[in-house]
Length: 207
Ligand SMILES: [Zn+2]
Image 1: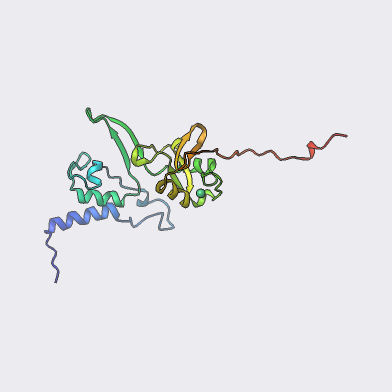
Image 2: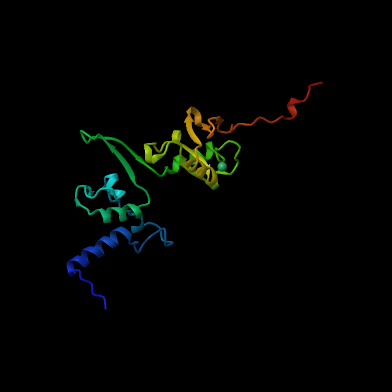
C-alpha cells in the first residue's frame, strides 16, 4: 500500500497550488452559459529561469519572481505546461533588461502573417496558410525575434526542409524571402500582391 509521506501542511499547500494553477472556477463563462463570474480571472505566474537550467545543462538560479527560489524540476514542469512564455534578454554585466520577446506570435501578428502570406513562402509552393506553420526566418533559439519582419508561413514540408537540409533563407524588407539552395543559387520569393486588376467593360474600345 502507498502512503502519502507529506505532512498535513504540505498537502494543504499542494492543494492550494493545484487549485490556483490548474483549477477551473465554478462560474466559468467559457464552460457555462452564464456570463461573467470568476471565469474572467486568470492567474499569471512569473518565474525566472536561466536557459541553461531549463535545458538541463546547469542547475539552480530559478526564482518565482519576487517570492522564493524554485527547484529546477518544478521550473521545467511549469515551463512545459505554460501556454506561452516570455524571453527576457538582460545585459550580462549590469543585469538590465534589454528586450522582452515571446516565441509564440501574438494574435495580431498571426492575422498580419495570414494576410501577407496567403500560402507557404517556399518558391513555387501554394500550400494555403491555414495548413502552414509560423516560422522564425532567423531561428528564435539563435536570437531571432518574434517580429513579423522575421516570421513567414511555411508548410510542414518546407519548414522541415529549412531546418534539416542545407537550404538557407533570410528575410529582406517588405517580407521578401531570399532562399539559397544547397548549390548556392538564390531564389527570391515576394509576398503576393493583394491588389489584382482585371479587365472590365470599360477596357473595350470606345468605337
Ligand atoms: Zn511549402
